[in-house]
View 1 (tube, helix red, strand yellow):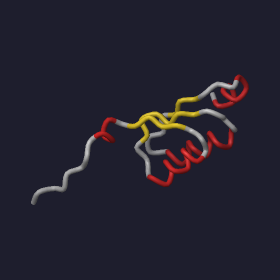
View 2 (cartoon, rainbow, N blue to C red; view 1 turned 90 degrees about the vertical axis):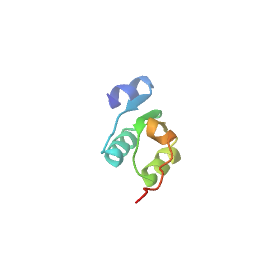
View 3 (cartoon, one colour; view 1 turned 30 degrees about the vertical axis):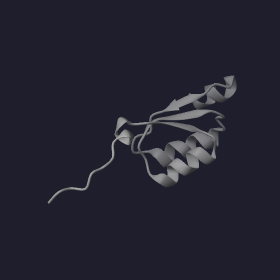
View 4 (spheres, rainbow, N blue to C red; view 1 turned 180 degrees about the horizontal axis):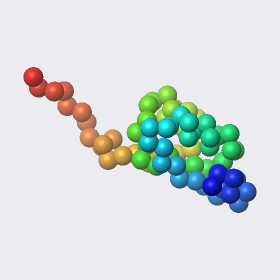
Length: 72
């Protein structure tokens, strides 16, 4: 899929749950120019690198909710 995207200059949509860094490295190594990391819920350092490389994310609905401290 990545080779085809590069060959035809097309974007890719990546669902990388639990394999965020591995997927980012594969996309970057393949020289894909445009990518969306769909439903991204990974760590901040990977998010920063995705943005630095000019790629995009779509967020999970959980990103819209604020975590409330537990009441014990």
